[in-house]
Amino acid sequence: MPEHEKTIELVPVITLDGPGGAGKGTVSLLLAQKLGWHILDSGSLYRLTALKALRQEAEEVSQLIEIAGKLDVDYVPMRDHLTILLEGRDVTDAIREEAVGRRASEFATIAELRQALLQRQRNFARPPGLLADGRDMGTVVFPEAPLKIFLTASPEERAKRRYKQLKQKGIDANLPELVSELEARDKRDSERAAAPLRAADDAVMIDTTDMRIDEVVNQVMQMASRCFGFIEV
Ligand code: C5P
Image (cartoon, rainbow, N blue to C red; front, side, top):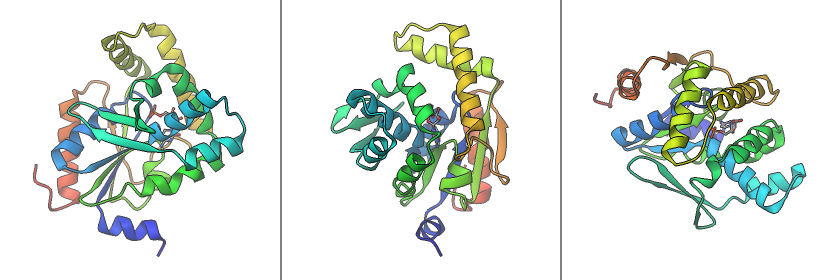
């Protein structure tokens, strides 16, 4: 049995995949707090690789793979977000910038780079459990996870959420631009050959367009309770 399958047998994993702005990050954080489990924000690894590459002006695939393989990163769970440290420096906001996100989504099309990040992602599966947030958590990284969720929402609603997040941070944003950026990223994520964004065959779909976050969290908690008998809702 491959090493990662053994890990999943021992550690419960819930995968949460879906396009940007569907609510995966917030839902994962709230579920992790309720369950006392770890979080894998897999998108942050692509963003961190992009940030470091932009800073070093690295373009070659071999350079990107080296950066990805050596990322010195720490995650510090806070009440309402994960603080992300790259080489000891807080880059939580820096990796959310549009230029970094765009680069991350371009780099995410490179199969060798995805491969370089694979084992690092699987190493996040530690007791008592893991919430894995991304695009290919249920299809590639943790295909044996017993509970797989695929969150969606309309592009307009997802752009509105991102707009609100940016405004709250005091970052200027333009809604129509956000919608087209988001659609371009969805297209790139869904159409790429390497681990495209798609729901695993055994994933449960939740459309969050008209749902409040607490409703989504409760729905996933009910499913988790049915799937892993030891969770009480
Ligand atoms: O989720 P987030 O927006 O932070 O991810 C940044 C980019 O990284 C996405 O646009 C996507 O292209 C890529 N990504 C990926 N696979 C994952 C997580 C993110 O390809 N598991």
